[in-house]
Each structure stands twice: as structure tokens, then as C-alpha cells.
Length: 233
Image (cartoon, rainbow, N blue to C red; front, side, top):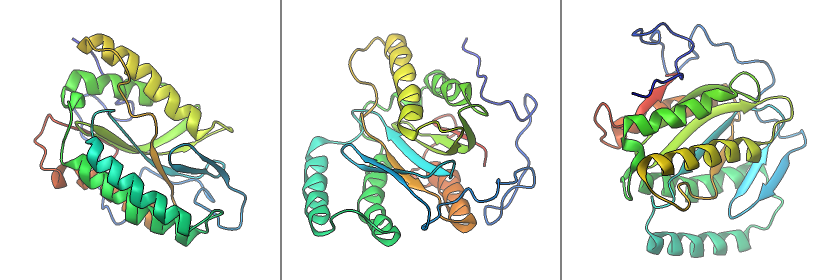
């Protein structure tokens, strides 16, 4: 039986203390000046999607299984996104980034919640492998705030630390878990989709919005207990 190491803050069998989604929990105090600063430099890079990092500012990130979205939907989505990007050349200001996520990222997340693909993360023992990877460098390379692991994707709210790059953190999570999960379920090839979606957290209000989204995601997707893992909210 696999044992989860992803519950370091609370005693075994104890639930996290309740708190309002409209305000930070009493045991959590966000470090100052760790939200997006529109006047400070931004580390920007782009694979298939644009990615922003600003020092140790909080980030909301989504990564998904490789078979979680049907190709015909993605083809239309890419066509519309490419047209939009041609009409909005970089560099982007904060409002343009926000518009991009509302128009394109939220559409993808809605499709993910429909639960297509193999949904390998529905298995609790598979989710434990992902949790263990998330907590492996917690407090060293990054700080976790909360996360949810859904049947075919995961949302994580965290902040990088000590100059650790967002891309390298995501690569370490996905590379390790992809290998061990494929071995466990007897498959080969890419377990995760190569790219991911991320948003810099703009303010305390935005931070609580991200927490609320994570907390409510399983309910909105109609999942039953045991089909997902929610931590931190």
C-alpha cells in the first residue's frame, strides 16, 4: 500500500481548520510584496503558450494529462488563439494577459472538467505519486499554498523560491511523475501534456479567487469523494 507524505501540516486523521474563502486562513500569512508588480521586470518565455514569472510572486498553474482534450477541439482552439495573438502582438500589458486567460485558458479548463481521456488520476494511489512530487521540494524550491488533483489535470497555487524557474519546477513535477505513473499503470509515452497554463497572482483578492477556484473545482465538475485530492483549502 502506498503511503502519502503529502500532509505535513496536520496530524493524521485531522482535517485542516476551517476558514473563509473570502479571507486567508489564520495560520497562513503571505510574505509581503509577493504579488505581481506591473512596474517590475517580468521573466517571459513562450512555448506553445505564454509563461510569465516575476521573482517569487505567487503563481496559479494548471497542467493536464496528454489525452485529456480531444484533438478536434484543440485544433479549433489553436486557430482562434493564433488569430487573436496576431491581433495582439507582444509585449502584452496586464489587461491583455488577463483577456487572454479569460478567452482561452478558461475555455480549456471547462473542457478539462468534462473529464475526457483516460483520467488516470482518478486512482487515489496514482494521485499520491503526484502529491509526493509536489511536496518533495516544498519549502526549498517553492512554497505550496493549495492544490487540487482532478482525474485528468491538476491546479497548484505556489510561489517559486531562490531563483528557481517556473519551467524547471513544472518539468521536475511532470518528468518524475510521468515516469513512475507510466511504470505503475503499464504504459509508455508522454503521460502529461508538454505545456501548461500559468497566471501570476495580482493581489490578495486574486489570491483568494484562486483558492476559491481550487476549492470549488471538484464540486463544479461533479466529482464524488475519492475521485480527487484537495489540499490546503
